[in-house]
Image (tube, rainbow, N blue to C red; front, side, top):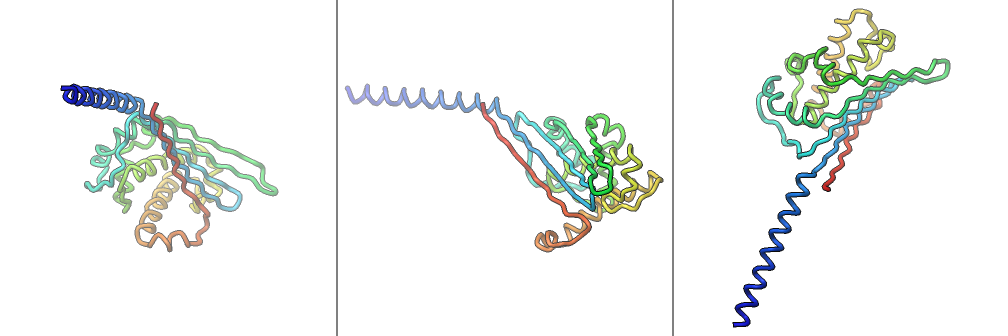
Length: 220
């Protein structure tokens, strides 16, 4: 009889600890926090370009490989919810400094609503896709949307466009410059897809560039 009561007591304690553990786990999930930062830096001569994109999520985003159709509407359906839910900021900085050069710093901190008004997402993405860009995951999606912020900064500063940033020939004609900028994005993507990772990293182009992703997870 004692053994029977002892077994019931152990089972009761085990069940209680299981319930408590589950409650603690669910509580921690409700306080989940995930911060992800994408930083791209490139430099040519005395000019440095830095793009910083930051996301904060209270629930885990979808980072699975995208295998659906390569059209803007389908991609937006797959990634827009996570993008809108987590996007915290996109900041672009263009800095010039050198001997005989007046130090200048240009910063773009447009909101996503302002950028969407200038360059609507669907139109922007479809133009890149039509050119040959492929988007395979959330990182690609956010990367190409962030490029609108850099273009906006260049649109507002004619003097920056005259510097040959991103190796784009200077021109006062905005539409020609914008087309060249988007062609540069397309050609760079095609170049990456057409070469091995090793040969891509060994290229000696006009830019030295780096791309960093920083992730921070918190459960409180």
